[in-house]
Amino acid sequence: MLLEDFYTIVELDSSDKENIKAIIDLNKEHEVYEGHFPGNPIVPGVCLTQLIKEVMENVEGTELIMVYADNIKFMAMVNPEVNSRLQIDLKVKYDTEQNLIKVNSVTHFNDQVFYKFKGNFKAK
Image (cartoon, rainbow, N blue to C red):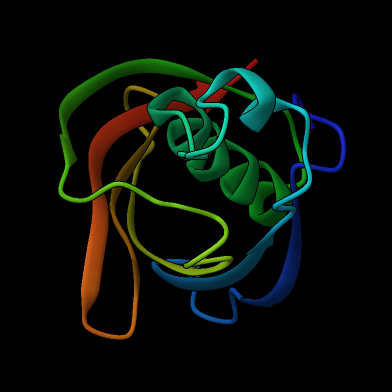
C-alpha cells in the first residue's frame, strides 16, 4: 500500500475476475489532506489511480505496474468528509499474448460518478 492507512477495503467481490466490485472507506483523517487542501480536503487524483492499482493487486495476488492509461477522467471531486465511502467497479480483460491486464473502471457512490479509468497493468 503506497499510502499507509489511506483507505480500507470494506468489501471485495472478485468471484468473476472480469467484473470486480470493491467498496472502499477513506480515512478522512489521513495526513495527505493536510496539504490537499487544508480546510477543504480533496482526494488527489493520483490516489484514485493508486486505488485502482491496489485493488487489482489484491485480486491478482501480485505486485503490478501501470503500463499506460488510455483515458482518465475526473468527473467530480471526492471530499472525504462528504464521501468517505467509494465503490469501484472494474471490467477486466486479460491479454495473454501481451501479458497485460486491461482495466476499465468507474469510481462512484450511489448516483455520483467521481472518476473513470481505462488502462493497462502488468505483473512487476
